[in-house]
Length: 382
Image (cartoon, rainbow, N blue to C red; front, side):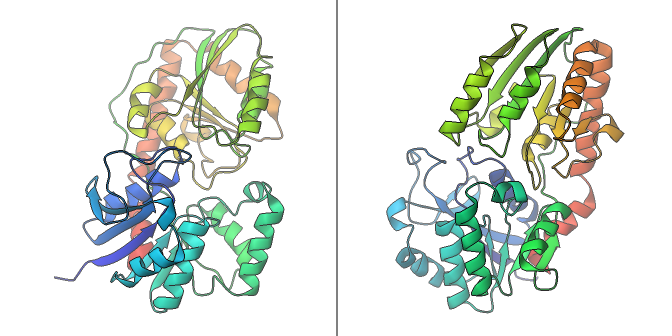
C-alpha cells in the first residue's frame, strides 16, 4: 500500500474560527475530501480574527481537533524561532499556504520552508488577494511588496492554486504567463440537501440578506445604495458578518439611515458557519454586488440554502440565470440590480419556490462534479 503524503497547511485562522470568511471552508473541505489519500497538519493562530484566544484548547503544541491534526500558535510564538523549530521537526511532502500577504502564516514560514527544504513542493493559494479591486485597497504597501518579491524571485518554483480562471489570469498578470506554475481547481463547497423545499413568499414582500465580512471589497455600501432606490413593497434587509473595517461600517450605517420606510434592517453580527443553513433558509435572496471574488463561498452557502442570488459580474458564478438560480449583473448598471430585486418582490409563492429549488439543484450539480474533485487532488498529488 502506497504511503500517504503529508502536507503542512499554513492558514491565519482555522476551526473553530469562522470570521475570516471563505478561506476556512476552502481548506476544511479540501482536507475532508482528500483525507483518505493525504495526511494534513494545520498550522494556525490561536484565535478567530480580531478575537481573544480560544478557550479550552491547547496552544503551541500539536493536538487533534475536529478530527484534524492542528497546532494553534499564540502571538508571542508567531515568529522565526518557533516556526523554524516547528518546521524543522516535521517530515512533510509539501507546504500549502492560504494567503498572499500574510507575513506570519505565509511569507515567514514560506521563507523557512524554502531555506530548509528546497525540494519540498510549495503551493500558494492567493485567495482572491491578487485581484485588481483587492490590490486597490492599501495599494502602495501591496505594490511595494509585490515589486520586492518579483525583484528577489521570492516565488520562483512556487505552485499556484487558483480557484478560478479569473484568479489564474490575475496571477499571470503579475508573475508572468511563462514563469507562473498554475493549477486551477474550483473550491469545494458544502454539499446541500437535494430534496425540494417550500418557503413562504408573499407578493410584494421580500427578505434579503448580506453575508460577508464588512469591508470595501465586499461592497455592502453598494447593496444599501441599490436598496435606497426601491420605495415599494415590504423588504427586510439583514446584515450578517464581522466588521472588518470600522470606518467603512460607519459609512454603511449612515447610508442605512437613508433607506426608504418600506425597508427594515437589522445587523445580526457574526454567525458561526454551522448555524448558517438553518438561518438562511428563512430568507428569499442574497444581494451581493461584490467588487471581486476568486470563488465566493457565501454564494455557494446561499444557493445551498435555496436562496437565489443577485451578484456582480466579478465572480466565477457566471451562469446563474441560465439555470434560473439568480442573476449576474454588471456593477456599472446599478439600475439593473434594482430591477432584479423588483422581479423577486413580485414573485408569488409558487413562482418563488420554483426558482429556489432551481438554485438548490444548480449548486448540487456544481459541487458534485467529479472534475472539481480531480482538479483539487491534482493540486497535491501531481
